[in-house]
Length: 124
Image 1 (spheres, rainbow, N blue to C red):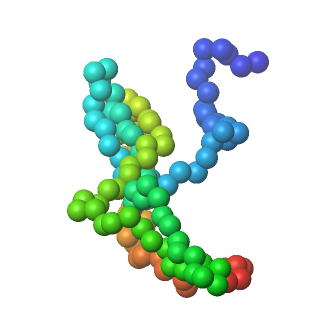
Image 2 (image 1 turned 45 degrees about the vertical axis):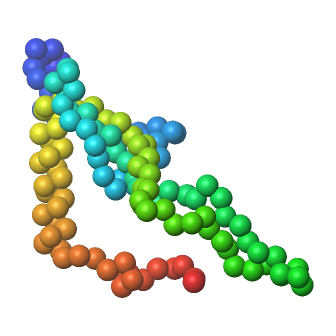
């Protein structure tokens, strides 16, 4: 019989994916240290602002012509859509930093991948 005072020799982590978990693209992150001393990260992806409208000319024969956009603006507008917010305590942030450094080192060791050299079963 095992003594309850003994510490286990292993910990097993089992992973489950929440049904609402979705893969997100992150073009960047914005945040900092919040008042509780946690690191707050707001992940976002970027895209150009959609025009308020577009129009197409209809020719006398009924064919559709080219698309007309509103006049060009002087300022390029880029939308940053924040899709995920994450709070990390110091210990988790330190572990994540080490993990990211390991992953970047692996990528640097292997060299950049070229997505077009990978054989894919997708017809184009």
